[in-house]
Length: 312
Image 1 (tube, rainbow, N blue to C red):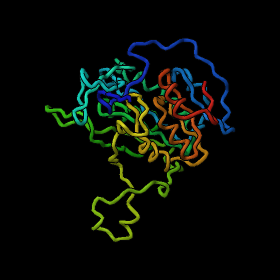
Image 2 (image 1 turned 90 degrees about the vertical axis):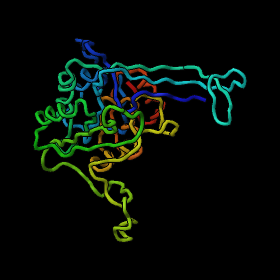
Image 3 (image 1 turned 180 degrees about the vertical axis):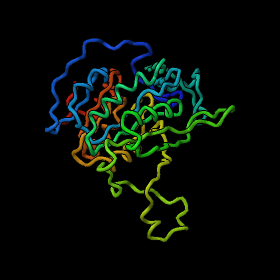
Image 4 (image 1 turned 120 degrees about the vertical axis):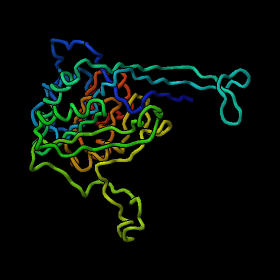
């Protein structure tokens, strides 16, 4: 049996580390065939790979970049085995166990100039987005206000669509301030008019006070607002991949459903565990996932499989 332990589950980290220089020679990869049913998972530095993708190809871009938390992200995978006499852990019914660490993933999430890191990538995202497309930019409270100003400059303030608050209730409780239990998702369209948004495709949620509406409305449910109450990925849930900062499929499903159609292309160039790709598979969207981390590539291969996917 294996269990995982994670510190600061809402904080996102990724490579490269602070001060790591970008390679001067871009890595070339085969030209992607966007007319086929093939999806792509690519390992590499997104600052090198994004300029090689064609203009206005993607209906939806979701990115969950490093949050610049100023610290490290740790995930340990532990192997638990019974040890009736000398086990160091005591479980249900007084049973004793040994634990052995089998894997440790540590990421540094510190950037001296975060906007200089993210700005060229957002400029590429703007170029790659279809005229009817939408960007969902997932960030936390440390950088959200700076990134909002940057996105206004790149996409145009008139193309700001929403600030979505993803609220959850998990992890430690600070005694010196209000506990931080939300992330921010900034939503921008490529153009002010003509962007695609299909409200009817969104899964409805229960009313908090169903007795205040008609039985028909209560049975139908209501549309979510810009505040999303949704748990993180459960520790022992089927979705769990063991990757730090994995985001729940329910959040990505709510993003993909209204802002893309079956057959549309979805891009995530900080792909991590590949949740955007997994949901795109389920909803019949095509996708390109990019990440520089070899661990992420292994997890995505195991999670997404081999059918109709080319790994580069």
